[in-house]
Amino acid sequence: MAIAQPPPQPPASVSATLTETDVRVTSGFRGAKISVYGAVFDPSGRPSDVVVVVRGPVQPVRIARKVRVGGVWLNSRPVVFEGAPGFYRAASTRPLGDIARFGQLRKLGLGLDHLAIAAPAERRVETRYGVRDMVVSALGADYYAWRAAVVRLKQTAGLYSADAGGVAFVDRGLFHARVDLPAQAPIGQYTARVILFQDGRPVSDRTLPLKVEKVGMERALYLFAHQRPWSYGLVSALIALCAGWAASRAFRRS
Amino acid sequence: MDLYLPIAEMSVNAPLLIALGAVVGFISGLFGIGGGFLMTPVLVFMGIPPAVAVASLSSHVAASSFSSVTAYSRRRMVDFRMGGILAGGGIVGAFFGVEAFRVLRLLGQADLVVAVSYLLFLGVIGALMLWESLGTILRRRRGETPQPRRDRRPILLYALPWKMRFPKSRLYISVIPPIVLGVFVGVLSAIMGVGGGFILVPAMVYLLRMPASVVVGTSLFQIVITTALTSVLQAGRNQTVDIVLATLLLVGGVLGAQLGARASARFRAEELRALLALVVLLVGLRMGLGLFIQPDDPFVLVSGVG
Image 1 (cartoon, rainbow over the protein chains, first blue to last red):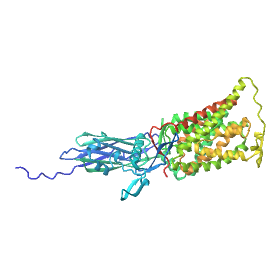
Image 2 (image 1 turned 30 degrees about the horizontal axis):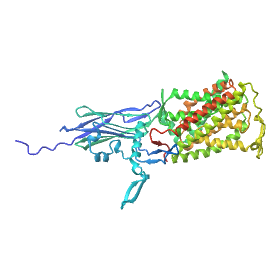
Image 3 (image 1 turned 180 degrees about the vertical axis):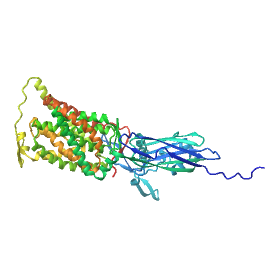
Image 4 (image 1 turned 60 degrees about the horizontal axis):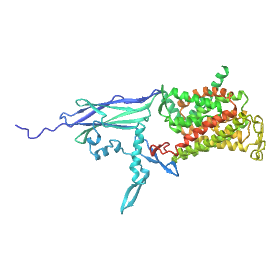
């Protein structure tokens, strides 16, 4: 006798962990290699895709365009983009476009094309073609060239990356992704978001905190420089003068 | 061996920076200049944020200049009175220069002003010095007697009020030209991230008519005062002095400066000037080149959020 109705399937879920949650920046810091390990729990064994997105602290970005004026290359007025993370890496099991639709990726901010960055200072609300309250950008049609340039320059600096094969299933339901933090990665609070996709929809996700902080000598110097800037300046000038004096004394003897 | 810089927030190769400091320190001791005009472009090229490079450098320049100025003062080759007056003007100029640079950074035009200043000042001064010193060398080779120095007293130096005696330089001139020169050099040094020796040295020779023997030492003395103050100002105002970077540079810098100051005794003054002129001219042209070459990427990230 056939079952009239299939039993309700338990929802699929994902769970993950980072091999390191506290990246300590010391004098020998040359970047960090972090792994994300996780598992997909799905008794029904539907095809699953996993996306791992690591974002650094948000920092505004100022960007200028080189324009040629009278044979000389000059910088245009700089444009400020808000909402740009200081570090961004999107790793996935397949190209993001195959995993979910455009709208879904845009909503979740997945992938370099869908990063939620904008230049609010360039926005104007005006009436165009008889339509009131239209939001237009002072950058006009070039807006996308500007936005793409932000991502491209950050990519060149090694701070933004996308890896369509960066998440690999190592065993049934068990996956692994690598995140390489370069030495120039900004200090601050990061998040690693692990999202499970099935049939183009996000069904389960986990957000893991990751902290990058200076410790020891590096931290002490940084705090000294920012909390007592004038004493710090005096100390550094004194070190310079003492070093100069010591060297001249040493050479006089010899 | 890589070392992480706490303020620049990046890691650098420590032995490379020490060697770089030594080379620039040697040049600094040899010619009596701070060497900032060489070091700033190199550091920026290595990827250190320009604001941090300029600020940390003033510390290095102060150290290597102090190291060589003591060597010069032992040989009584420093006019402290003239140096003090120049430095007084320099301090005023540095304040204005730091503020002007802040405004330019906000407008996104700092790169342009830096490139133009390098091209203009280094190019012109380098070319003039090269012309003059090559002429002197050639005349000496041909066995001609050096042209008698025109002792026409420049009206600029003698007609202005507030005259002062400078026994070391054997001058009795108005203090206005040295003060104006000091202010001008102070502004430039804050904008270009240099000590200003490459302008001071020729200006003292050709404008103030100081004897060549005290020019180098006096210029170094002025540079020590202004750069030490600039590094304190930069740390206090902008928090951009990286003490680790500065220390790396000055370890090599003070040693190089001593060797350079010793080596300078072995060369003739005009040969040294010709060599310096060549270096100045090349750096100026290299920095200015960027204005005319089509950039690889039409966009550029601008530092200084605010």
